[in-house]
Length: 497
Ligand code: AMP
Ligand code: MG
Image (cartoon, rainbow, N blue to C red; front, side, top):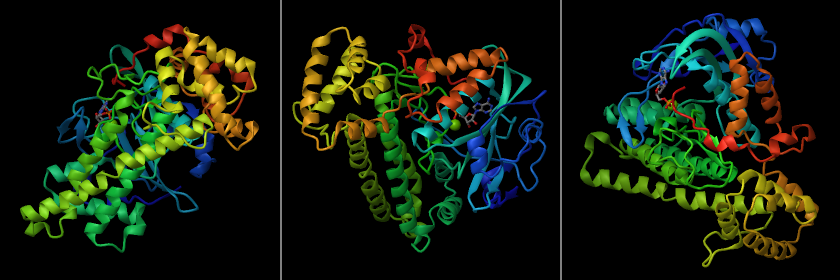
């Protein structure tokens, strides 16, 4: 294994050196072969994986650190957070030169643990492991997950649980809150260094620009990639649950899987996080919250947009703020365009207009889904063949009590399809490439966790396999396409993990 630990070459203000704490009786619970291959780790044996990610044998060439950051949590600024229970073991470099942060979640306390134990419980590592790979296979940018190591380490949450680790991998774990940390401490030198670091290693195209231009180009890239990411979440029905600015990646990756949830029935006000009493992070709020978080990042970048921070005047500050606002203004139109294009693809139509006065066919579809409480993913998936398959229409109708609205919408949809130039085969094929057959519903994760807690890890493997090809028809997995069981609606997921 080759390492090039770039982040740990930053000054000491950015991180603390740490050592992971071994788990009691660790064992390899699951190993992601696809990712291992991408990372050039196919040859790693089970014993080695347990050595490195459970017994905490140092990786030769690694340099374990915990990064410091801050962030707005539920709207309030918290001046110091950081890797409280995850440790950057080192930055792996593959033969082709790709860098991977090897981040061990649950590896014990760090200076940023704030009195907590630095551990992760088995259930939360399973949820993150399955979901991050599910998102990746859906084509949504995300951190990845290489392995889960289970153990007999006792960890206390609401009750006694077992600790586990998750090896998370990503090109970078820098968050909006990493910039906020230095901005609010008025450490503008470190702020400059963080920007320079990101440009040098992740946004090389900007390297010829002045610092001000770099800051604006970087910001625009974050704003645009965040808008795209959120459009993808909304299209697939993913609710993150804790969109604090410390849980927002500057690379536009889905990061920090906690109390997330995929929509079962379509409810825009869906709140997946049990602790989110006000619904700040409700499903329909996500685009607005993402923009709010971008505003936080924009604020933190302000000193870099002012040409000479020493000569900072009110006028210079106001000019910089207006330049940041100009970039921020690009979020909403970009989000709307991405979302609208995505909805059109999901419906198999060339174009839809979600702003149309009096509502369009697409808005009427969403109204129908909501009024009838139809299952989000199933409804879209069934639509692909609703023309040809009596069964698909039957399955759609089964989700609806009052048939009138569905009948008139289907009639309208058939007229719209007749005006499309594609054949119905082409259309249903392309619809099936954007409407997943399988998503990781909470009840599926719950079942896998229940069994895992009893020592049976087969359902974790089974779901990992199923979610590798979320858009494919897999007859042996048909049961995962049926309506979720009734108890699914009562599942509540908390932040405690
Ligand atoms: P999260 O909401 O999971 O992103 O966590 C917010 C902050 O709390 C992060 O800085 C985490 O590192 C820290 N944290 C959460 N759980 C633990 C834990 N069990 N031990 C130490 N730090 C934790
Ligand atoms: Mg976090």
